[in-house]
Length: 311
Image 1 (cartoon, helix red, strand yellow):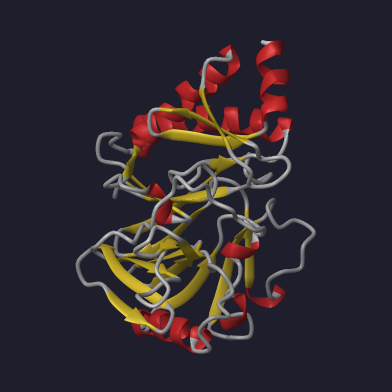
Image 2: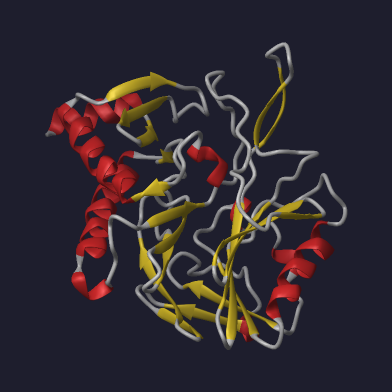
């Protein structure tokens, strides 16, 4: 999301969840999520994730940190997303390169992104001029945009796969809504998916127009069909969702397939005019959170009335 975020007072300080093998490097906190899978968050003890609140309950700052995920196969290593551009720590570029290259070994380095927003592209300068870094990029999301080096970029079509070797295969799926061609990445046979902002990270997926809501409605149907398709070998009971702003999951232990199913029910309730509502003021358009269960959609009340009235 390449725009200012103003969170409501109801949000409290949320720190990244404790996981085994957690270390800090410059402005980043690195955690091991699963064998061959690391989480890189642009937050540390000096600038933790989320709202910063002092002992008197006063808000003193905020770090809407963004997430990167590093998947290590036998032959290739894939960095998913490039987080915010870090200005608060001058070691950001060297630190991120050190994290990635210490894991790379003799593997080929590939980099992808979930969507074209600045807080998921910010650290591109760390790798843009690196001859060893290749970019595997969703073609439609970046069509007509010269963002990545042409000679080291593969623009892939929807549902393309990248075999990292050793049983680590990435399967892509396009989910329009938050952006026109937001793309998520399933780690095949591992019940893990990396979603960027395509379905939100627990605090609300941001939709910027009436048409984007319609696109998102179809995307949720598409995602559920994909999850339930036996060919894809996904166990809904074990699926874990890693979003682009993982701290926003709040006090939930993790985001699961139930989050997706709740999104589907929420969309139905919005159509009926029966969703729970909370007024917000993120910007002039994003003025209402619509809620059901674990799911939240951040949208516009006037367009919600237009949509529910047309049903």
